[in-house]
Image 1: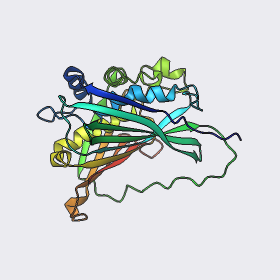
Image 2 (image 1 turned 90 degrees about the horizontal axis):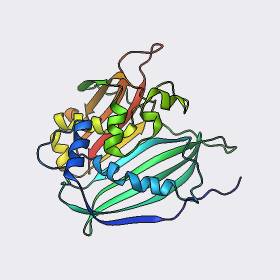
Image 3 (image 1 turned 90 degrees about the vertical axis):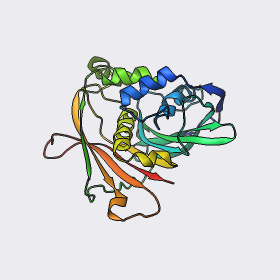
Image 4 (image 1 turned 45 degrees about the vertical axis):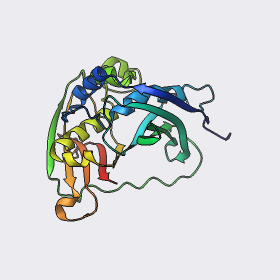
Length: 276
């Protein structure tokens, strides 16, 4: 097997001025109702999405876009960020490694205000392919031991993928309509994983608003595709409600299918948010 490497390009953009109208439209699609002009934690991911595409479209990027899946996303926010702030951003590849189902790599993004880093993300992608190397499967943390103290039912309309595409810039055909998704082997179009993560955080903000006023990190793993239209349920657990952690706020959450299929509910997303 030929050695596979990632481009070492680092993209930088200075003096980014966020558009209030665009932020408001993004907030409407993801259900963010925080008072004031503080941004949703996932909004800067959509601002940085063109940088993701610039990296993925480099001539020496080793993988085709077809067959790539976003499997994990981590966002770290140091403080609330407001629309009127002027930001700079950098983006680059990191962490190429063999995976049981192909090759995994990350796109890392950092936003600064002056010399201060205020937001960063790590988006882990998987290129699905066969290889001859033996790789131990990733161990998944069990989440069924919690007593879920927050439950929220979501009704997802068939046009949700198109609505989110307009505010996120991600017009991948698998999210837009049934017939465009069929072209890529899906029985139905699916909602973006980042919309699901965004709506989880909007839901948590309504029940635990103080956590978003601090420094925090949000980890999510995207599991089974969430087809549209659909009805799902989000479950959340506040670790501190049982005195588990006295030094930081922590919540675990997941998104499940509402109706069991073959005796089991589909698991679409698992995640946690904790202050740092």
